[in-house]
Image (cartoon, rainbow, N blue to C red; front, top):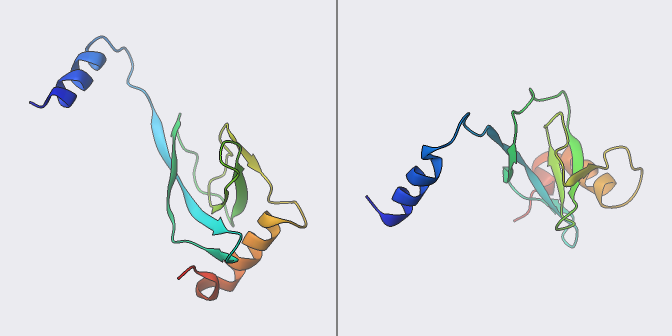
Length: 106
């Protein structure tokens, strides 16, 4: 076994319930290029994911300031939901999403 794997196993040996986490996925909006990147994992969030909602929402990372389009229903801690803001980066990101492939970053 590698040293890293041993450390992980030892640190979890005394764990009670396993930690529940899920992958938050979405598309990064590039403000300077007015485009959306391919969908990818944005963050790993503690807890359990709710089902995907109908439509999409625009969230902003409080830590990095990056804007993302996501289908996640609940906005996790350290992100803010700016879907209903009528102007600014989220409004532009949502408009880019409506354009589909025409607004994908190259």
